[in-house]
Image 1 (cartoon, rainbow, N blue to C red):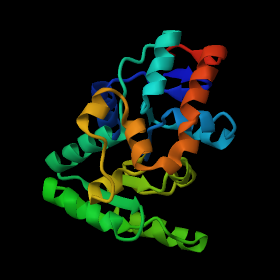
Image 2 (image 1 turned 90 degrees about the horizontal axis):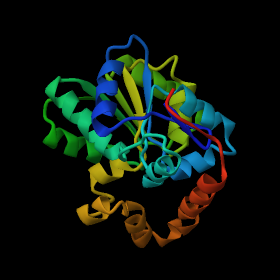
Image 3 (image 1 turned 60 degrees about the horizontal axis):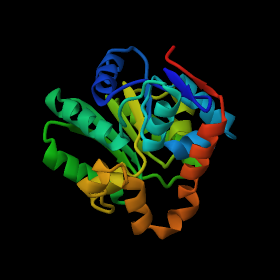
Image 4 (image 1 turned 90 degrees about the vertical axis):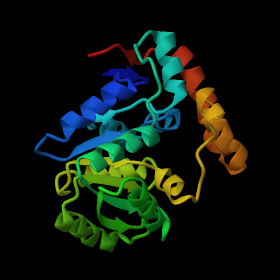
Length: 243
């Protein structure tokens, strides 16, 4: 792993990240996959709990072109962006080929159901063990965990938004009965057809963030984290090479 502004990121490509996932599926405990972008790295600067979550996660992929730029500036060895949605897609293909089970937790009411329908159409061999939206009261949390543990999914996809989803998995990692849990943010919205992923040209040019800004101008405040991140990258020394 390396550290960017004190935050752990694994030095992986799309291929080696997937190989790491395969290894995690053989572990006897719940393993956690995190997908930080520049916004999350910036948030971790003043959120020690989030930084601890990323430090302890079993696979932390560089989901953000800013992280790749930072790596090049400081020669940290990251060679390509590994997006959460692409990693999730590959995991779903694995689940389909190996008849593994999944649980979808999060999103607005109805979103997880629509996402599950689309996943089942695309990957008919996947077993969908459970679905639950992300709107719940604190007193309902134990019931949700009991439900997940009762059906024992191989894969738990949590879409509560970052960093809430990462913290939720981390806080419950010792009680959740699954092989791998992954925070997937807005991926369920895309699967459900509620949101669209940026066109290929935006993806190729690493401008997915700009496409989202065009679609959702209200995100401008959040998008300011990118230039702030790059300024901090240039002046900070809080980096470490592979360990």
